[in-house]
Length: 344
Ligand SMILES: Cc1cc2nc3c(=O)[nH]c(=O)nc-3n(C[C@H](O)[C@H](O)[C@H](O)COP(=O)(O)O)c2cc1C
Image (cartoon, rainbow, N blue to C red):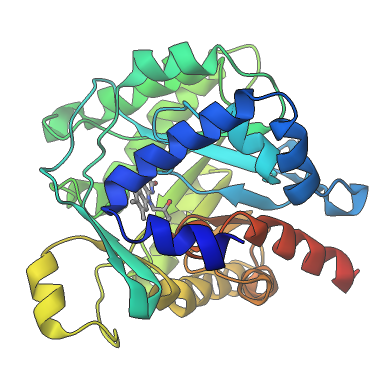
């Protein structure tokens, strides 16, 4: 029904407007008696064989919603009825910020992709906490954290720490997002020495809490093998708990969209089917080269059960979707879980 009926309507509107409309629709319908059960009966599969023990947590199933969809943690309770095993909120920054000027979100329909330069638009840490206090506890929640765009390089760590300390009681694992291509001044966030310092500072803060939360790093799909070797070293040296591979890509080669269309869109990170193989290659490299030394959450271009199984076969312990959810609809989550069960 989604692809035949809803998607053509949704895709006839501005992508960002329809994103907000869909949020209101899901929020509204979830309050109507009976709808929650309808959503659950359509989309949720519960089977102990889908459970995964990763990052010190037991996930009901290995399919998650990637960061950026529920940036402000306003819909995760309702999205829990769509079959996900976990939902990553954020990227949350200490202060609220508007992000880049609109238009900043573009569909590449022929490529089944999206280009975005949202620029960490979010309502800030305190607003996210207000929402997270309403957690009905149905799912594992990841907290994806970043720095404000205006923050000076010498204060980056302070921003991450502020988010980490304040969100610690409310999320189950943390993601240090150091790979968004849309917020500028990222040279420092690609520097291994700085990342070591950042991870060390966050881990030290983690140690001050009664219970520690797993911390993972979200990386770009555009890293070469030498850079991936550095990531493996970094994870080993810092005892980091895992890696999310990957964020959106700066590479636009091989797209069906015309050069004129791409030119008119301008800057932004590419997601969806065009990044699938790149992100899978990164997962495979990290997994093989490290001898499966740490958990990997695989994300990038999962639009079918087959795509998700490819990520798992490449070494991903869990998978996430974002663009595939927009193009293929909510039944994608169930399709992936069914395929995992069918493989036994
Ligand atoms: C509109 C949009 C906004 C995003 N915002 C974030 C974000 O705030 N933080 C983050 O870590 N990733 C963000 N992402 C990246 C996704 O989480 C994911 O890593 C990437 O899109 C690749 O997966 P996909 O091909 O399934 O979309 C965003 C992606 C899109 C399309």
